[in-house]
Image 1 (cartoon, rainbow, N blue to C red):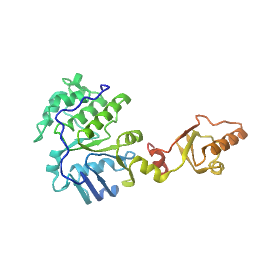
Image 2: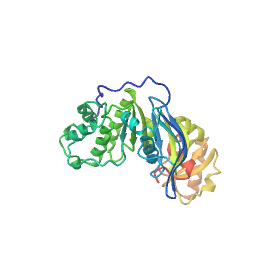
Image 3: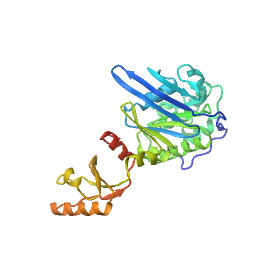
Length: 322
């Protein structure tokens, strides 16, 4: 992908109609004995980037498939652009763009051919050349889709979501399989979509992606929404402390560290020990004194503000990416 993201000419101006672009009230969906979505409710306002953050299996993809009309909910209310997702799926599909987590692309068509094919499916479409350029696929426009790398196929899937000039774009794990540079470039494109007046609902399991892009987000796990709000709102509800982070030491038990000055909670994130504290200097002093007495020293000692990862750990007892 190129370092800069070209503007997308002919972008749709946001609809003058008022109200949220998505309303979900007590939505539920089960597959056999598995409750994939378990009574969730949230709202996406016009012109914002809203993120569903959670691990694989949290229910994120099932949620957006219900909104897109690809799957019917067992119960609940789901409205998209003011329309019922069950009764008005055909009308909704003309006005939304959909990037699926796993897309089956026609293997014997070129990038340019599949873009033109998808554009023909809609009442309204845009020139495909600028979209191909914006997604960094210009050099691949004559390549068969089956020859594309995983990251290139992911970018093509995003490009296909834009051919009908949608008001609302659904992005399901859009940066999976991309290298860091390509991921950052796609972030730029997502922000450009917002500047163009589009609304975006995206799923991700990348904490930094949610923090960088989302105006509001919902943290999901096991089919439920655990928290909603802005990043700062969600973090501040759970933490006022700083986190002292270091490589965990077997010789130093949690009960001992829990009595360090200022410590409100002891946690672990993979191989890391975390001390949430209201008094960083006193906590670090006690940690260094305790490790010195044991003849060891904490390595990779850092101080950071609590993050969405910390929130997820506090809510579920496990790290987001476990």
